[in-house]
Image (cartoon, rainbow, N blue to C red; front, side, top):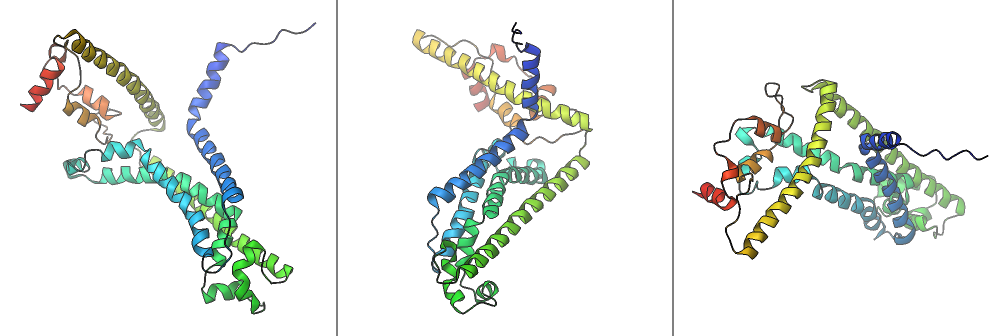
Length: 318
């Protein structure tokens, strides 16, 4: 007799989904690391071809080593919502960056954005240095007497002329010397790679310890705060889509039926500006976001349900 297949219950599925949701940051970094390793291998196998001459090696190798890191940094900044939330409109209103003359919070937020954007470039540099291919090509093309003497120490004078061709294994040096130079270049590259990984890990650990040490709330309240912010972002997107759909329906209905639009509850420009500002936690307020701080403060001087959207804007203009 065959035992009946055990079907997963809803509770077990919910538990699995909750686990993956709680490990979203870890899964994201793991996916980024896998993508970085895969991208580096693709570049190395299908695109990178060291020219193996002293005039081009350094520029070519350095471009492949640093170029993708700069691109990843740029992408990280472009897709950063906190950056654009802080930066949008600051050219027209520079005081937005430093509300009430306090620029410390702005610099702290920009530093946090930069740190998060640096994760992917550091991963790329670490993987590329551990592999060593780009570093070998770049360093072999440096026309510095000190660098050449360092690698060609206790070797013939031919080494100084053929060092740039070593990465291609096409030099006129004996096979033993070529292998020794390649091992030396690879070892230096891997030392730099591990040094970068160790430095980034220690800086991340120290930064996390300092941030938690300076936290104004307890660990459990901080955990609740993070959960709340995630839920608020999810709900905001849902509500924004819902209200945008309702507003579009209302405007189209008014247009096609050729009649006055119905009254529509909608935040004014000042409200959008206030909930988009940089939030600073205060123990006296016990608010977890600018949105909560806005709705908690009594500021309702009229009933928006009775004011049409076009009249509301005309009131602000006046």
